[in-house]
Length: 228
Image (tube, rainbow, N blue to C red):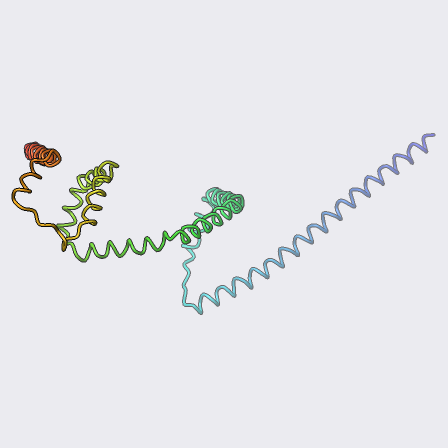
């Protein structure tokens, strides 16, 4: 019975020794592979270094070993910063990928909008407007343009008042009446008939309107002069 137990223990020891030997062989093979890799990389590195030295010498570039050492030290110290920069760059690439479809749609919408503007004549209008500004620059001096800028509020207020419906209607009536008149076929009116016309209710009301207008204009002008 004891012989069987001893034999069993011997077999277990042999199995463990086989495992240990196998592990040692594997580590030796890995070590050989690493050593071969290091040798290959060393050869490649030497070749690359020699090629770089030859190329730098051909280009007339001189390297200072101290400067290279300082540069390598700085690169090692800023490894974390380089990593952050790369992470930021990767984030920007991801953002550009995400924004790609959206920007594509925006560009398509912009093209359609520009096409609609062109069909409506916006670009031709801007070209004509450029000519208007060219004429202003050519025909007006700097002082006149500055004076125009100083009074632009008053000009806009005047235009706003002129574009009121009642004012436009009055101007339109005056223009239509002038258009219907024929300067070459004006009837002659005697002095007596003129007096009779001036004494009519319409003319009296017209004179009243003119006088009231002139008095209000004079009063407004006096107020403006006082404010100045």
